[in-house]
Length: 284
Image 1 (cartoon, rainbow, N blue to C red):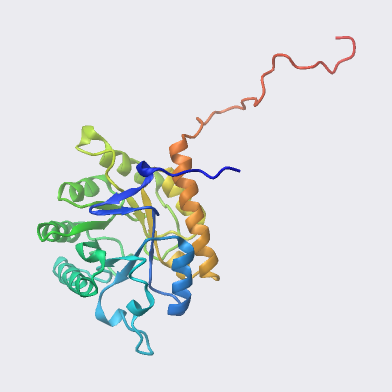
Image 2 (spheres, rainbow, N blue to C red):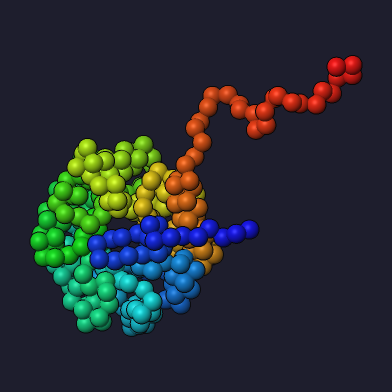
C-alpha cells in the first residue's frame, strides 16, 4: 500500500515553531527517566513539555530530568504546572525562559500557560489565565494557554494574543477523554471563523484528560490541530507501546477529519446499485 505523503500545508505552526508531529507529550509521572526516554521516542513527538519548578527537575536519586532529554532532537515547551495565581505563573514562565536560554534550546521563546482554579479539578482559572496571558504576551512570549472548553473564554485568550488556545478534553490526569465534544467543536469553529474575528489557521490543541488512542482520534476528528497529553502514556501498563499507539491515532484522526467523512443517515444506503442485478429467481 502506498504511504500517504504529507506536504507542507500539513505542518503545524505555533508562533515561530513549525512541527511535523501534531502530538505533544509530557515528561512527568514516569516510573523512571529511562522509560520516559523510550516513550518519547515511540511517540514521534518533536515537542515535550517540562514543568519548570526547580523541585520537579530532579528525582529522588538527584538526577536531572533535563539530562535525559535529547535537546538536539526535542524542543522543550516549559509549562507553569502547579500555579494557582497569575503572578506565580508569570514568575515560573520567566524561570523557564532563563533555563532554556542557558541550554540554547529553541523552546526559550514560548510557554504553556497553566493557571489553575483549584486542586480538586485542576481546571483553569479563566480570570487568572487571561491576566497572565496578557502579561506574558507583552513580554514577548508565544503563549499556549490551557483553558476550559468555553468558547467565550477561548476567544478572549485569542484576542489577548495567545499563540494557541488549549481547551481541556476533561480534567488533567482523569483519563475521561473528550467529555463534551460539542463544546470543543463549537470552540474550534468560533476561534477559526473569520466572522468571529478568527483565523482558519489559528491552532487549537486539545490538552488534558486523554486516556486512550481513540480519545486522540476523536479530538482530531473534531478539527483540533493537535493533542497534548502526559498521564495517558506515563501511567499506561506499557508506556512505550501506548506512546506508539497515540502517535498512530493522532495521524489517523488528522487525516480522517481532513479527508471529509460521509454524512450520517437514518437508514441504510446500499454500497452497490440495485440496477443490473442478476436475477436469482427461476424463470425471470
